[in-house]
Every structure is written in C-alpha cells, then in structure tokens.
Image (tube, rainbow, N blue to C red; front, side, top):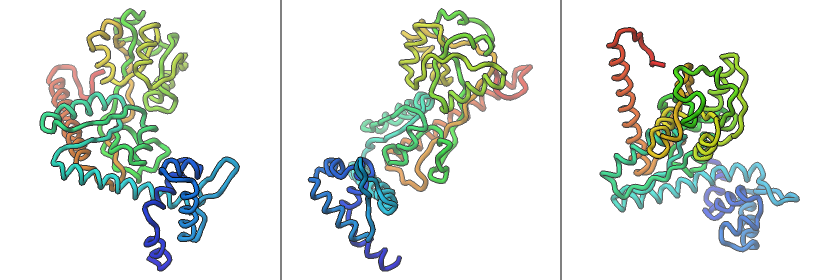
Length: 337
C-alpha cells in the first residue's frame, strides 16, 4: 500500500462511509443528512472533511441535487461492502452468543419457495424453534440485486443475463416444467393431450417479458410456428393471476410445483385445474445463489445446508422414480411427458 493510500485508510471513519452511501442512495445532501439523523450543516462539514482526506471531490452538484463523482462512486461501492460485512459480523456474534438460531433472509422464485424453502423450515423448526425465516418471493431480476446489496442471505433463482457471474457462487438446483392453469369449467378442462395450437385464441395471463417463464412460453409458441397469444394481464402476482383465471377463460402458465399446489389446495381445487398439455415446456434451471466468497451467518448457513440436503433427497427420489418406470415395458429413458 502506498503512503497516500495508507493515510486515507487511517483517516477515513465509518461515519464518512455511511454518508457516502447515503449520498449515493438519496442524491441530496439534505436527504442523506435526514437518513443519518444529523443536520444538513453537519453533513456538509463531514463531506468537506472527507474530500480533504481524499484530495478529490466525492460528489458533484447539479440542478436536481448531487451525484457521486468517479471517486465517490468507487468509495460508495467499498462502503456498501464494508458496512454490510460489519452488520453481518454483529449478527453472527449475537447468534453465536445466544446459542440459538436467529433469522435468515431468503429470496426465491415461486417454485423453490414452495418446494424447498417451506419444507426446509419445517425440518429445522423441530430442532431450532426460535429460527425465523424472512422469505421474499419474486423474480430473479429483483432478488439478485438485493442479494448483492446485502439485503438477502441467498437467493434461489437465476442470475440475470446482464449481471457478472463472477460476482456469485452458484449451486444448480433443477429445471422447472411449465403447467397451464385454467378455471375448472374452462372449455378445454378435462380434455386429453391439449395441443398448444388449441390455446392461441384464448386470452393469457403472463409474467413480464424477459422473465424465464415468459421466455419459455414465447419460445414454445415460436418453435411450433404459432402466433403469440393475446395477453390480457401481465403480472408476477399469483393472487392476481388466480383472480383473472377464475373470472374468465384465461390461461396462466405456472411452474409444476405451483400448479400442483394451487390445483390441489382445498377451497381452490374446485375453482382451478391444470390442462393436460400435449407439448412439454421447460424453464431454464434455477440455482442457489450467494455472493462470491461471502461468509453466511450461522442461521443462514444452517438453512442453506438444509435446503442442499432437500435438493439431494429430491434428486434421489427422481432417480428412483425413473428406475421404477424403466422396469415397465415400453419406457426407454427420459422423463415421461
């Protein structure tokens, strides 16, 4: 480390880092001061002090507030990591000192939230009754940035295509099969081997463009030479999608696990059902995602390992099922349609 770098490292304090991050988040000195419970003059003095230490401007004034300079942006990125690590260190100490499981913060797309997170929580609660899981269900493009910001311990989803894979440690889980959910008295409910071509004239409820489920559906229509169907509602909300389906002949694509849960849930099962689709539609595999090189808290590590065991158990179950099917005549390997 050079003398200048060493001098900056010794003189910068945590309040400087917190102010830099607040400026990055708010774009205004007054708003940053409020976020830190300090007066605007005090924030301005601290900013001036920080710029003297760095020998460069941290932010540049504009007509609508301030934006970080190149120096300020680099410092804010480091500040985010340092403050996140300190927060997590405090959390580790509290959990270890208390000798009990604490809280885990998980992001998950819908299928693994149902198929992995809930069963893992049920398993762990028997031995760790104080464990609390905060689970945010959403799309990967929302969850993965929150992982990078330190707001989530890990995510079960997919790394968005525009993000650098080197920023993450990725453990593949499994792919998803798409099922089509309709109301129980839909014109095609109960039909055998419904072709995708028979569904193009119905209205659809879809996830936003670019999401894995939407891409899988668009690709399936394209490879079968079919026009894209009319989309009446675009939403990631299962409740909103169900409301639309129950009131119309709309079709909504969901993951296999989500479809099985909704079509088999008492109270819902008379209202919605799954179509017997002739074509198989698959979504790209999802994975367990952590920040590269990140140390998980004791509770997060406990949950991560339990989900890993569930994944292994489910994989063994699928192998056993395939072996069982192979014992019947006519099955030549692969998954049944």
